[in-house]
Structures are given as C-alpha cells and as structure tokens.
Length: 281
Figure 1 (cartoon, rainbow, N blue to C red):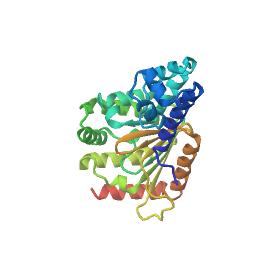
Figure 2: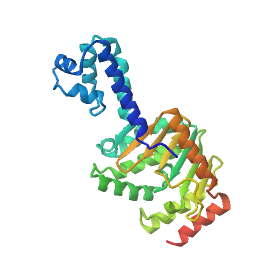
Figure 3: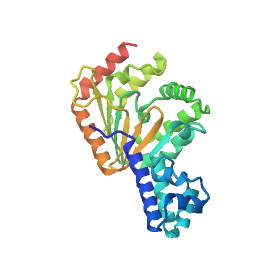
Figure 4: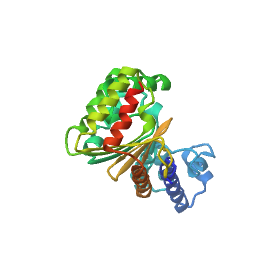
C-alpha cells in the first residue's frame, strides 16, 4: 500500500522542527525564553517546534542566533527550503501562469533516463497533443483562477515533451482505460490525441500499457504519479504537487508501478482498447 503522498513533506518538516528544538535545548533555553530573545509572541517558538508554523529563513536565523548556533543556519535553511518544496500548492506553482513551471522542469526531464508514469485521470503531459493540452490547461486555469497563459503553456509543454523523441530516454507508461474516455477536450481533439497514442506506441523507447476497466485489481486506482529514475516521484493531487524523495517511499511507488503493470495490456490488446475509445467518440 503506497504511503500517503503528504508523508514525505510532513516528515521533512518535522525533522526541521526537531533540529530547531535540539538547538534550543542545547542552548539551555525554554520556548518562552527563546521567543523573548527573538522578540516574538510567546507561542511562536512552540508552534514552530510542534510543526504548526513552518519557519521562514528569517525565523531560522533569529532562532540560531539566539541560541549561539549561527554555524547551523545555512544547513537548517537548506533543509527547511527542501521540506517546503516537497509540498507546493498548484495556486502557488501557477501564480504567474503555467508556462513558467513547464520551462523550469525541462532540466529534470532532460536528465531523467527512465520515466515511469501512472495516469489515472488524463493523458500524461509528455504524450499530449496541442489541442488536448489546450483543453486540459484551459480547464485548470479556469478552475484555479490563475493567470491565463494557456497558449504559451501549451507550447512550453510541447517543447518539454521533445524528450520522448530526442535523447536517451525510456518511458514506461500506464494509463487507466478511463483516461481514454474522459472528455477533457472536444471530440476532434480527443480523436487526435488517441490516434497519437497509437503512433507513440510504435517508438522503441516507449512501453505503453492500458489497465482495462474490467481488470481484476491487485492495486486500486491511485493518484497520478511520475517517477524520475529512482530519485524522485511527483504525485499530483487536486490542490498540490507532492515531491517524494525519501528512498523508502520511492520504492513503494515503484512497487505499485510494477503491480499495476501486471494487470495492464500492451501491444495489440492495448491498441484494441484505444481503437474502441476512438470509435466511441
């Protein structure tokens, strides 16, 4: 059973809080005394230690300075920033529109040799056609009420997707059959997208499996996730992207991918499933 996707972020935040508490105790201070030295409300240090309030860079500097532990400031700030980057709300990621985040993730896509992707809701981004992507990104923009740069974001997504055709990259892709049926774009765009899947299946670096609706499940439908080599798994929830980096959790997601792979159909059987979806339009 995969670990809930928030667990890595929560554990990382808790680890930062525990380290700050240890710094305070090593200095022989109570939470109240520390708050006084920092000029804070008396409850702030307690909220930070309990993980209720994530510390800012300024909070960490003040905390360590008050404890005479200035040498620990750089490491703690780095750990805190890493913890915060593990769970980032889409509204924050898309605050300036969606083009920027596509461009920022290009280096990650380029350095990844092996992609393992499980999609339970929409066609994975690297396989999306322009019109399908436009329909999806339009829905996301409207729902999140974030700045409208859909046209630019679509082009950025297509540029990022060149990794499927260029370089030394391998793709293991699993799609729930329902993904082929969800109308996130108009009929013409859906037909083009499904035909594109038939085409991409022929690529030697792509293994595309479809999990039939009627398959006997050994792993239940999960939230979509992208595994980048064995180093990182990005899990997509309604409100946020969760970046899993703990080795144990990564292994759990890869185990789920292997189990889901066993109930997927490929080759001619997968093509038949896709063609039936096309015929239903």
